[in-house]
Image 1: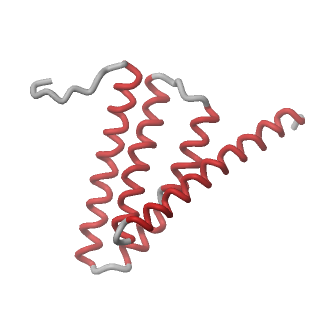
Image 2 (image 1 turned 180 degrees about the vertical axis):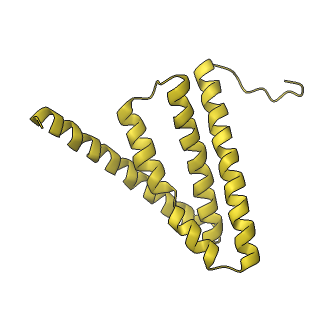
Length: 136
């Protein structure tokens, strides 16, 4: 590997680390501000799903975010902000009825958030304004 390639890889690793630092700290802040671990985990996972949905569809529709920008946001920030392992621990340490509701709600809101991210990316890439009028 040439020195230039090595420096590019090191730069990418450092960029991802910066995103990871920001994402994990924001997740910690959310945990401090919400009343329960279930609410905090659900919130960060839904927001992360929307952000990742936006990035995925932005790449398909317009590809205006640089590869390093995408690495910072997806691999660094979003992966440190969201947490699948905490989702599982939260689910198995609560009552069975709450766990079923939590898992169902998490998946339903997660999929909905990806769709919202896709629509946001589509609007940004096409310049379409969001209309709040009935019938649009």
